[in-house]
Structure formats: structure tokens, C-alpha cells
Image 1 (cartoon, rainbow, N blue to C red):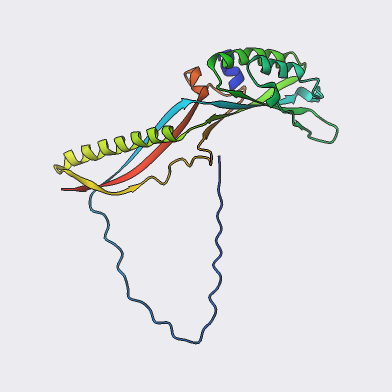
Image 2: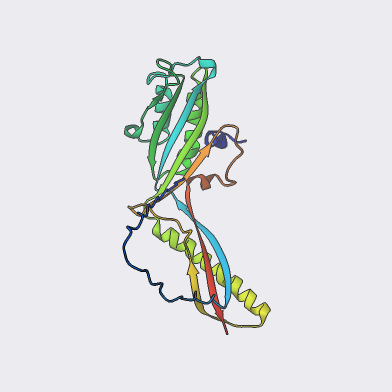
Length: 243
């Protein structure tokens, strides 16, 4: 495993509850309405299509999770200063760095988190950070990098979502064409479309990709540059008529 992977190798659920109040009793007869038959099922060819699209992140938020071997390290701001300096050297904004120390018990700071942000991260910063930050951590006796969390953000994500959706529609159409050819029929107009699984953008139009690494994890990507990309996917279900 390469040094660049050593550093790197270290979503949202929404719950909706609705309560329907019990109807009050009334002194009148309820006359049932007419029975309405369900609409007929669409006649045609239904296919699925999916695709993904990626673009370089406009910012990255990196969190290092440090623990102590056999509780031999008492983490303080002073103890992790070499790591902070290495992060700044690698391109992290010093003003963005926060140090919410984690205490497993009162008075025991045997673990710590260090978080910092980079605007428009580059491959050079990534490669430099692997070396400088890794060296700084190794210089603290007993310090262990347990985990690394990276939140990659793309500021304007709508064009990327459009690209992924376009790819999904193209693949769905290709499947429908193949099926129609095998059935010796021609495709008609679109009867129904379902894109319910599409990514929902943030209020500001951005989107993000979360990456999580640990020292014992195999490389996530074959290309190092992929670690800096935000990826979105789209899936559609389309029913085409036949003629």
C-alpha cells in the first residue's frame, strides 16, 4: 500500500411521522361514494437506467481521529501542534482548524480529533499532506491515527446532477431500443417516468461526498485523483409506449 493510501485509508436519514386524529362521531348516515376502478396499467416497455457523474470538489473538510497506544499520550493543544503545523503546510487553512478533544473519562485526554478545511484542494496538496501529516503523527510517541473522515463539497452541483440524469436516461432508452428490436415493435412516446431516487441538493445548491479511511483499509480508488472528486448518481425508470 502506497504512502498516499496510508493517510487516506485511516448518510442522511429523514424520519417523517404523521398522526391522523380520530374522526368525531356524528349522528348521520354515511353514504358510500361510487366505486372507482383503478387506472389501467401502462401498456409498453418499462426499463431502468442509472449513471454517475463526478467533478472536482470545491472544498474539503478533513477530520483526523487520534488515539493513544496504551494510554501513553495525554493529548493537548501543545501535544498536537506538530500535526497542526503539518496540516497548514499541506494547505489547510489554519483559521479553520478546530481541536475538540475527546475525553473517555474526566481528566483523560487519550484521544483527540483535529478538523480543518481546504478550499479547492489539489492533488499536490493531497500528496504533500500524506507525507507531512503522517510524519508529524509518527513523531508523537504513542500516537496512532485511527481514522480519517473527508467531506468533499461541490459548490454548484446542479449541472453534475443534470449530467448524471442525462446518462441514466440515455441508458434507459438504449435498453428500450434493444427490447423493442427483439420484439419487432417500435417505441412510442414516454408514458411514465420515475426519478424518485435522485440526489436532493442542499439549500445552497451544493452536494457532498463523504469518505472514510483507516490504516487497515485497502485503497478505495485506483486513481489517486478520484479522492478529490464529488460523485453523484441518478436512476430512472421509464415506460415507453409501443406502436
